[in-house]
Length: 229
Image (cartoon, rainbow, N blue to C red; front, side, top):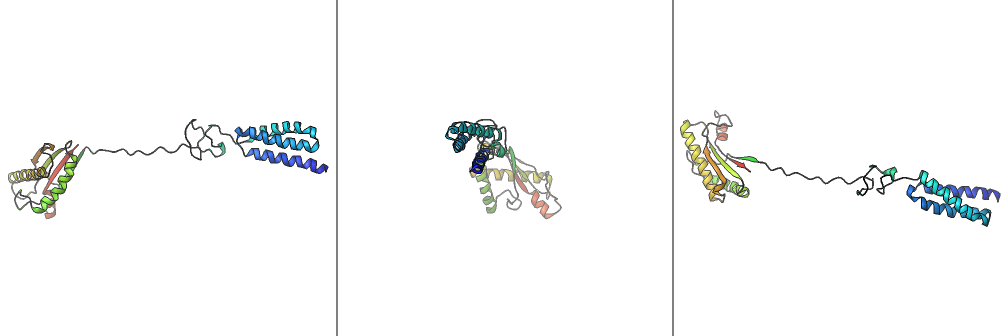
């Protein structure tokens, strides 16, 4: 019986303290209550008169142990320090299970391109002419739909270009006629005339490829529409 009286208090006290060690520092009142009950029970084993002293001693020891060895929460975010991956979080900030504030939402900045150039190379015109073919008109219908979405704030500049076949003066006039032909068709398609700030021809003076080849000359025969927003 003496062995039981000696061993039982140690077992109960160890169980109480072990349980308190898994709690937070702020849980010391719970530890004190559990320790008090356990202390009273231990005291009563010896004598009923010892129950009160046992409760007082058990509660004090359990509360103190809980405070000294319990898991703290220094930043008060509700996540114990032992698993708080973001210590020092300001009070009032919502945190996740790891004690860290949720990542800020990514806001994608919309970048408005101030200037854009539409290069039209598949508008062929009739031979040696500024008259549009049926295929040219189909292509320009698509571009007109696009440009109507830009109006009325966008400013449009149209420039016609030719290859080097023919005289400089002839190519200059041909490029001007073709630039105006494209512009008038786009206006007929619903693009406001007021959106066009310039319609000019550059002739053969601004090649983008080698005029010595057929492919190069085809690339140089083009109409460019510059969009300024």
